[in-house]
Image 1 (tube, rainbow, N blue to C red):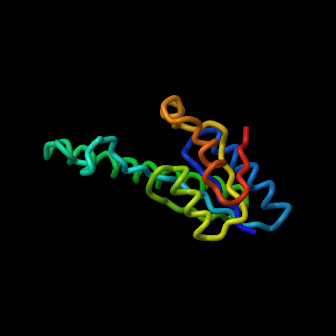
Image 2: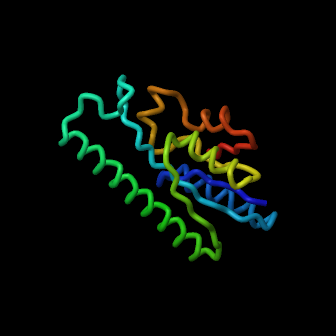
Length: 148
């Protein structure tokens, strides 16, 4: 059995991981913690840099690089905490909209289930596009557990 846990550094994501480790204990499942970096740039143009100056482009690149670094820090911290508790977990950094990228990853590795916190660090984004947890449930082709 293979469980994928969506992580973003929030306490809710930590709860989802804790729940997944409980399931892994009972089923001898392996766990992969997955963090998504969303490099998309909101723009009405087909070219995501449409009308952007060279400085704007540089800021966008720096922003993505910062998000990658933060994502790797989150995954490293999770791996360390899990190791200290006696769990060996895998980690993966993916790119794109979190619900799309992580559900695609789960499909690619043929995971048995996805675990996600009911709220994460994207709370502000949720007011614009709806609950990220709900998007996981709607887009996934396998069971999704939303942990409170």
